[in-house]
Length: 216
Image (cartoon, rainbow, N blue to C red; front, side, top):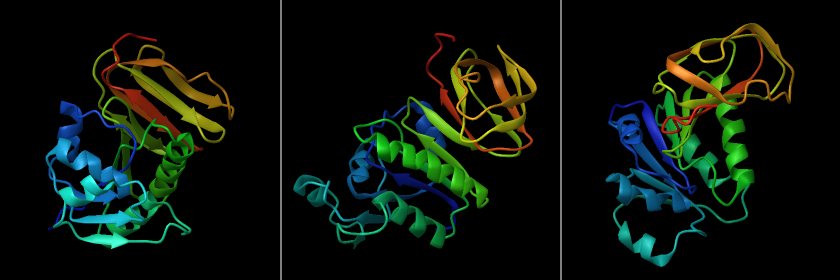
């Protein structure tokens, strides 16, 4: 297989939308422990299944007998998702889609996925996190375009002070804006089509709700 786009199936909730299916088309897939439960709904068979399998029940294990498994002990220094990410990068990944990365019962895991996404983007990888209903992409210095439906809701969450932030083609545009760390100034904006972001310095996440057309 030659695709350099890898989808990592994680254990958070996942709503299989048309937009999600388009994003995953042609991707190679690695499942992290209970993230395997999304494979059937997506109609895909991962090439690898990693983890300590403490959250995969017997029914799930029996459902996929032919998928290569890479087991790890529960007492380990990395999450199952990080192990799966490492495997994808070792197999040539340049783009990573984390499906089931947002919300769910473990807010610590969801936050760690956001932090990891920023770190991976700093290493030059193209990263998308999705639950089907929500999407998140890292925002670093430079320019990024995000194709969002008209009137859909999004926020920019700063993980540091942000300098020189531009947001265009939105209801509430910004130009050369300085956002202090922890400010809610960029929470709840509305796309007017493809949104253009530009940032001079800082780290942030754009969290979008493509199917939420209620406005800010």
